Length: 109
Ligand code: HEC
Image (cartoon, rainbow, N blue to C red; front, side):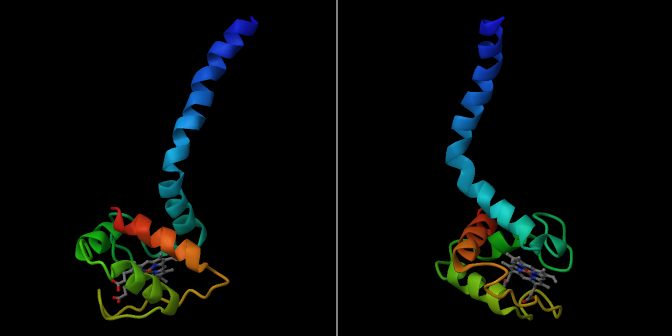
């Protein structure tokens, strides 16, 4: 009986341990979900804002992209993808650290 339980739990514990190295990618997604980006962006379906696949493709290999995109999300603005503006995202909504993580996550698509 006791051995059965250990056998059931072992894969679960292993899954938790193996999951740890990927926590960073998940963080980006969690920030995207919790800071409201989801209302206007998805990974591959055009909504009010561009898809993150299109964003990643547009800035592929551009070393200035992470800093530029973080600033754009912070300040908001329009004109790159159309005339609809993205609202500003002040520091009480998303921190500099969170911006860095979410931008890296977006560019990884
Ligand atoms: C109210 C809708 C809305 C919300 C909320 C929103 N965005 Fe946007 N986003 C847009 C629009 C519209 C654009 C296109 C702006 C343009 O054409 O310059 C955009 C553009 C972008 C771009 C590309 C910028 C560029 O210059 O190429 C990134 C990256 C981005 N958003 C990330 C985010 C992140 C991360 C969040 C959440 C913290 C977020 N957005 C929240 C509407 C939104």
